[in-house]
Image: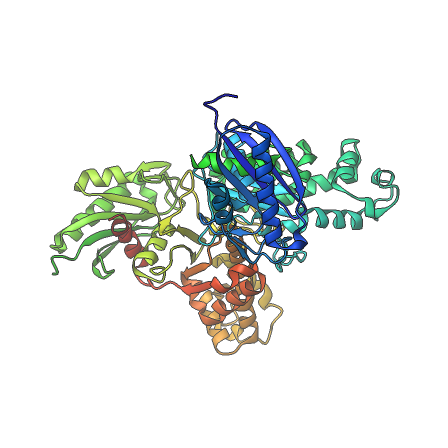
Length: 320
Length: 320
């Protein structure tokens, strides 16, 4: 154990599981545990599980902890550690999780939205290290986002900023879960993408996808789209390319409005890799205002596994 | 003359004319002159005209000046007073106008993009006074924008931020001058709006517009669209309503991404007034993410005439 090294506990609170770990200042995961959230039992029970998890971690390890970082869904009041209406966590309404945890452990506790924590993770340990400003996009069931401006998370006046998934690319486009139309999430979100591919696939009877999904449309997934695309299937490749065009179009608007030109993408669908990134870059290069063009970067997130824990722990290190 | 009152000179540098004035700290315009830009004669000549204009103003008035503010087109390097490639000012490339003017007059000089100056004008003297953060939109030939975050202009890393006109609402939409597609400017910019109305009008032979334009499509203008709408012409009303739907859709994306929910609109087309503002508000209320909904405000700019001069002068007061 390096005595000069600092350590933090990162808590990644999700709707299904709570992942906790001790992370070093250099981003190394020392110890890790995972428990079921059992969100249906309500906030009190979930908070108890977090407390127990932190106790368990502390027992496993003799590292002196510098603070606790918590990444969670929903809107977090900037600097206050209060979580509001997190989706997938029924009954939360308003929970001052920061206060509860800091009281229990006599530690500094930093709470932020999970997408913001992911952005701070990349800023501290990952692909964002050398950039002053960037936008982090997490492509999963939803499309999450965090905006880093001048090495800090931009929270907006009420902590709700960074909803990159809900920038619309077509004001008359497909209906999004949020109530709006044509949000980029309604194209790139896992469910939406699968649904679209299912529909389009019917017009491509020769696609290799059919074999991969064993002729069962319910088996369409980002993984088999990627597999088909990599094996040269033209239809699957066009899906990836179109997705890049859509994401690139959304990123272009963000570049023009914010003069931020670095995009870091994580999450399952970012696994489409080079063909997706190339399509995004090509789109932005074609569309964005001329002065911004040479500065555009689209990079994969560096933190893969345990990105949630590491991002949460980075909330602590970033405050030092 | 109130001795405790502070005064600044505001310079509104446009492609056609340079407007200069002395403005009090409370936003009162004391003296004003206007000269032709004669942009074709190049930057040296234009800067000479600005210098001469400031001398003329100083001679006209005995007010002690606290500084000089300049609003100009193009990208201005934050804090440096260097103007880059302003559209409509040929040959400018890079001009350090801040340094030249401050050397000549031994005064503090603040330079910013004209849309940002308009935003600071509203923040200092107008509709933005009581808000921490808002987005200013100027609806003219182009659609300009300035983002105020936490009582300051957000410049972005390279000074190019705030191009609200180039947020796209349809990634496959009409081509915009900037090279992209479906930018809000390609709907709400003066030329684009007129062009669209000219085309649509052909399908509305009974519209009152025909009389107002004396059957000459080249005479379609925001003014006669407004006149027709106000006199109850259903076609003209639908144009205003649709424009509100388009602007409201763009503003929704901005709300979701930035958690800024106050919009201040100036410029000629904002003169469409209540029907336009109502349509925008209705659209945002329907589309924006639920937590933001109660906070949304869409307000007319308060500075009308001389907004350019007042905004430029506000660059000085805002720095005090």
